[in-house]
Image (cartoon, rainbow, N blue to C red; front, side):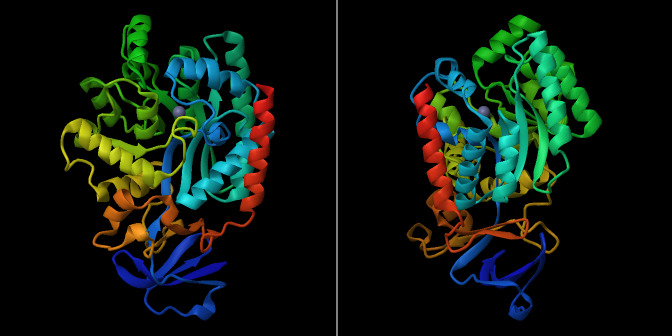
Length: 421
Ligand SMILES: [Zn+2]
């Protein structure tokens, strides 16, 4: 399969892009269209790399708008966890398909997921054609029997799904230090090292987590994970709102990837401290952005998240020069792709063909002084007109095959599900 995108704005110039198989083959003007299976007219559009969502729970699209305007603890304990306990594998499949649909429409080509009923998510990602780093939620609530069950389940998922599909990577998903025992975290650290698996965890989301950790272990959360041996460049830690200087040093030195989720943190109001971007970027930490689940966001639009991140960081540090548009976009693309070991997140020969086309005639994209500025501050995911992932055209001229069926199924699943609550 080969695709030719003609006359598109790419890396600052009008050119053609040829894609062969899963990779970008050539970027040059006036390439021969007769060699291509599919020719796309890129006139009036810009080609940019696909975006990376560093932290989400995709199937939670089914909980979009289900419980808003609550504090984190009662929101989790009274609404989300009881509802999740009733979810089926089919619900997760339908919800993840809806999430992938939204991601394709708004430009995300790689997402880092942690959720229940992993086989449902794997099936959805395989069908939809974007890249998923998928982990099953691991929660043992400090119970030995539950721990053994979860370990067994994770091993069976790895056997069933690992290395079976170029777009699906299976990771380990210990939920958080307040829901997972030390013994289980030690098991995760050992297995991750042995098999080279990514780990996805929630870390220092609230002040209470730090207070409770100090009380239980005499250490702060990052120090506790360091003591367990969990810190490495295979670890993706979501939130990281409450870090002291030593923790920031430990995270940076060990190469942990830190995922800032500005919209979720604002909506659930995790306290007065927020992801310390300035101090972490000065240290050279690996930083990504995420949406978190659709019940605390309530969408998966990475351009919207990028704008929130940039504005929130400027406001918090009282510094309008912090997190400028170009840097924010590099986090969405280059930093994300490199962190997950999928190329460099750029449009260049040899790179994975994960490319978006952006409508330059969208009213919010006019005039066009700086594309980076328009992408982060002016437009949102609705400016994406085409999405290519792994060399496959998933959306063309705003049309995704099967979209109405996916939406109808998700609507029906949510309706049925709501009746059981
Ligand atoms: Zn989360």
